[in-house]
Structures are given as structure tokens and as C-alpha cells.
Length: 167
Image (tube, rainbow, N blue to C red; front, side, top):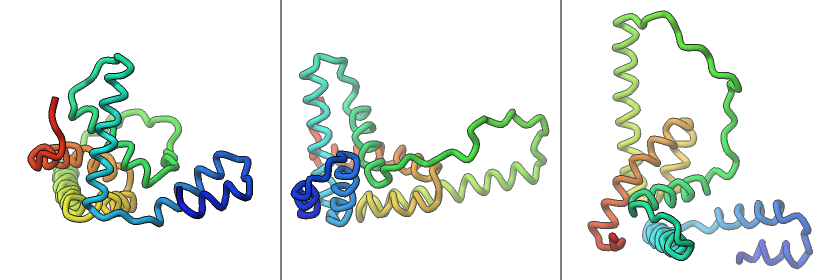
């Protein structure tokens, strides 16, 4: 527990929500190295696997468990879920896109894929936290794409390094 969290307890803050928020902010101040971050993910994965085995629940593939661990890890950098600007979905458009619109859409998709590749590389060579923060600036789509790619790339990397034992 950080010094800030102990101080809050000492002052007897009764609101657990306020305490959790303060502890979260204090933990953010404690930066992790890439190695520490990988070790943390490994511990969380092992813990999640043990919990599933102990409860007797169906144990999905290890990669699916890792997907959930990675999602929780990424969400820990953004504790407040983003608010959707539209509460009611818009009806599908009845207008077909023009060939120019389709070309522009393809260029955007290619640019997005390149951006995701750069973010994944930053996460694998630096920290996931820094990559997530950059993705958050670019929007929820980038965060989700980063998560999807990290699950595959990070899992394969950890298995290759024999950091994760497959079952």
C-alpha cells in the first residue's frame, strides 16, 4: 500500500470509493518498467487460471484468459469508461458510398492499421501503459484495436520466451 493510501486510512476516510480513487492515482504515480509490467501480467494470468480451477468453472483456452487479463490491465489506465456521444444508434444509411468515399475509407483503414502497428511496437518495446495513453488520445477505437493486437502479440511473445506455460 502506498504512503498516500496509508495516510488516507490514518485520516479515516470513510468513503471506500474515495480511497480507491486515491490508491489508484498513487499507483499511477509509481511507474513500472517493461519487465515489471510483464511480470505483473504473468502473475495476473496465473491468478486468474488458479481462480477458475478452484471454482470448478469451465477453464477457457489460456489465450482467452490472457485476453481478459490484458483487457483489465488496459482498463486500469482509464478507470472511467468513455461516454458515448450518442445514446440512440443512428439508422443505417441508405446512400451508397461513392468510389471516392470508398477509396478514402480504405486509406483511413490503412492509416489506422499503421498506427496500431506503431502502438503495438511501443507496447512491446516500452510499456503497455504508454501505448494505451497514446491510443486513448486517438480514441476508443484505437484502444480496442491495440487491445486486440496486444493479446495476440504479447501472448505469443510470452509463450516464446517461455514466460507463460501453456496448459
